[in-house]
Image (cartoon, rainbow, N blue to C red; front, side, top):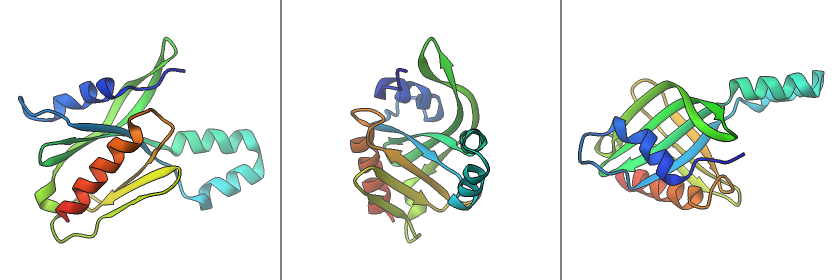
Length: 151
């Protein structure tokens, strides 16, 4: 199955930013349900556990556009063996200036880059897998560095 490339991610996020603002970095991330939900589902049976985990996983495209972070939560759609943005569930633009003095979490491990920051509607958190695409890890790290620098 083909995955998003950075150009496709930028194209999906570009309607969320003002005209003339370029998205410099874009990354694909997910937020999976808690292990306290996943483990009992897998203990009952493997297939229901997989289905429940997939149903509860949130998919995000996150981009950095100048002085703001652009986030789109979407339901993926498989079309012609490629991943595409299906239904857009939520989207928001968070100015970096609003993160000043707030607790942000950003870390990079061997597999995932994690990013979290508070917002008025509730905290945002996503993890970005390094193997998703060639540019996913460096882009996620650049977005996390920008968010940390603003906090």
